[in-house]
Length: 206
Image 1: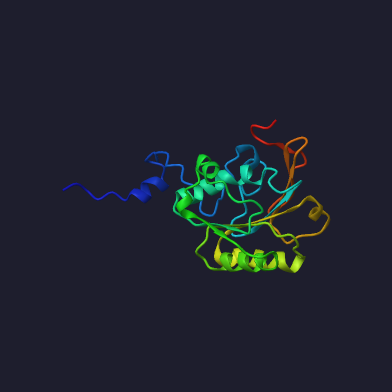
Image 2: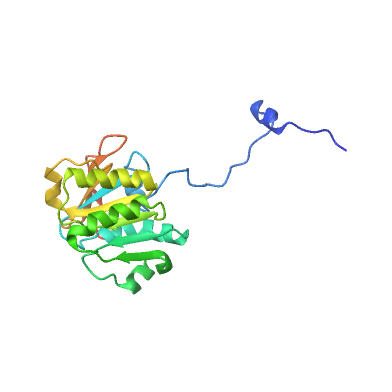
């Protein structure tokens, strides 16, 4: 029987070359699926276990196109995604075409007054990877509750709000404004670094 080799010691002494390991996603990293955006964000993607605000020129102006790669990845991994009181009825063929596994997509119907509470409960449950909501009104306290709930449940929280909300401070870890003309994303605030000054053109809509 051959001698036992202390592989760790040899690696430490650089006597053995370590082959490149598989490019596994670092723990906690939540890429957006848009390379140009990931490169500009300090955390390389969505802030994990945190609230991200998407400030819209109008409902349905591109928030799904921004989020679909992430939602497709999560549902493809068998993780639950919840939509709380979406402003439009989700068109299943479009979601499927975007790669979202509908078996892991849940829609919660709630009145406007209850939508934030429902989103908070989903986030706290620990059974959801991401929760999307479109609150008509949300003050600092309500948003802070979503942020804490996302941390508690280790989930991604997305609050889609109107452009005008940018005038008010927010506890969200990330704020992105979605513009229509030109079609671009503007990072207004990001955890872990300064927000990039230059807007990012929306892929396929330059």
